Length: 494
Figure 1 (tube, helix red, strand yellow):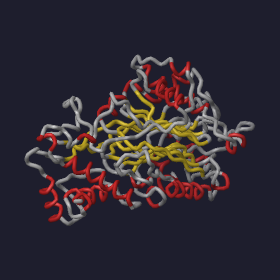
Figure 2 (figure 1 turned 45 degrees about the vertical axis):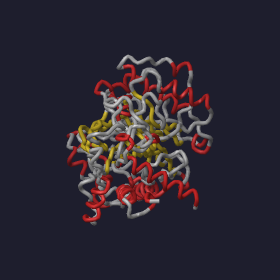
Figure 3 (figure 1 turned 90 degrees about the vertical axis):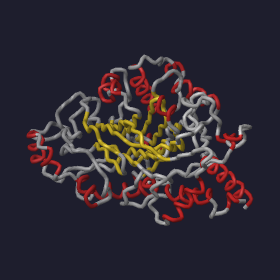
Figure 4 (figure 1 turned 90 degrees about the horizontal axis):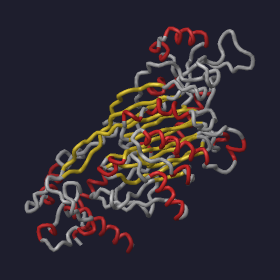
């Protein structure tokens, strides 16, 4: 068949498409943008010939990519083993600032349970993850008058949740023909998830994952996944704590694609300590997370290739209690904090050194114009632990910026980087607001990219079967669909 011929137009498109989505090498800045008119892999004559082959003048197909913008709020908070309580709603509202209405909220927590032997080596208990998801959803949605009674009536397990199928009435048709599914245990639980996180809300829970005390929760504005194709939502966890494999330290990650741009969000809790050698333990854990985090393909995936590793994504956000400290004597650190000389203090910051020539080389972070976030003496206190004169039984800790947010990749602009002042734990929450660009496949005459413009939309599986000859003619999109189907059939026969 012509579709299986590597020299055919569809074969060359598939080759180019897969080449664009191959995993990026470490330390090489990934470029989330590509344009059918600007291919960067050489073989320009072949690419020009390919474009002439797939251009169908009878349909006037002018396929290209454009960039749209999304506002992404990323936050991290070590809550010191405390359960969310009703009074925390005010603090959460101040932290998330839902009145500013970001398109996506990505929240990473550490120590949502106390790191005791029972919780570290025992079975996962989803209770605290469910409670945090409930409070986050309530905070985000009540600002817009959305009903929020269902969670009280039907508490559910939310420690490992992936939202990957949109209701047919809300799904935006796309060239990939998304066929994702909700991977939950039991039909009744699936229904409760939908009732809890979908019905009547402005923000939907897209993914959440808990590993002991490390927890990530990703929420998306309803209008975003009605407008764009959101696919391949996956979660992953890496335990690298005690003995190198217990979950008191490690990471939980979420991977997803929005149109043609892939995102990876990593919430991490790294080794603590400010003694010599502790920094090396943190660096080894970072390397371990890079190596062991994976998002393997499954039978439920669509035909869109998706990144399998962290560095394969277009835009990556790494955040959490990273525990990097200040290589500075305690009294000098406190002196600079008192002067609010953040620039001078950052000269001694371990994580900044790792960004220059270490495990986070090439990663970016906003200017830190706020006080160190750890360690406060106790909850409901604005005084750092230790110092002189010391108090009985109080831990001596040099204040440090333990709670951080980094990013890697192009198409990301930092709008703000700040800490909040909740006294809920001995850490202060840290947040960053980003403006990110996503690439969207567009066509000047497409009947399947915009159902608001073209309400009588045909699903991809019906392309080429219409009785209307003009609608049934071969297009760039139908070439992709046919090529994918042919490849799938071929692989099944092997």
